[in-house]
Image (cartoon, rainbow, N blue to C red; front, side, top):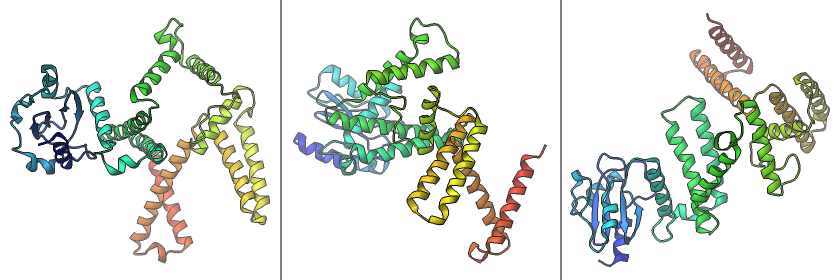
Length: 365
């Protein structure tokens, strides 16, 4: 079989886009070795000439490929492919070691396969930085959600999804000739070394507070080196709005532009509420949006002055509302009613019942 025809035949049956669960099927061809170990949940190299790349077969394709090999699954290796040098034959016959470096190499190869212009996944090939960015944000939130729920069984999956986003962006950049994953890893490693001279250099050891000050000073120097001027330079516009409000005013506070304490922020909050009340009769959406924005901005600063993260505060409030409203629905259903049949007064009574029960549980000795 010609090389191109073999590739087409092989890749037709490789579910490259789904790689979370694998079974073991060995395949061999004159210039190709593929072994996926049964029960091992990992792939080893498909040796293509002198370039190893990873390809995976899902469990439902096992029977299709079984028997099309001269390999022995129990031994964990295939017969050396003809025409390969001894070094390459050895590389293709060894199962991939279970190390961080090997698994990362495997992930990078999977990403390359997904974006392959001839045999990759059509959806993955069509994506761009702009279309993938929302997924990157979503995956970061799913990591935060798993941590908030203390779901450490799910956390490796969520962190993997987030890592895949980094790999995805790096692969697209490499295709454009901009940078590669190695550049991403090198940049962050260099940055961590540079920002921790007390660990990797000769600077004296610092406590957490001193390190925070030194960290921010190093970041400021880096912004200057990038020709970013102004105290607020470098605060990403894509941050969640409450987080960005807190970061902007944290920067302003470093140069003395800040309220003296939380009580002063509360006074400003009263002022903003008054201004919003004054705009209500106008019904002007733009003016109302401006006043509501001011109100939210002050609330973000109140959280900052109390050493609280405004996003975390709002997230917890969302969870509390979700929990209580679900209990309200249960209370109403216990009375053989639906929400559509329930008046606002009845729903408010159920809400107060749920709150009282919750407070009683919290105050139990």
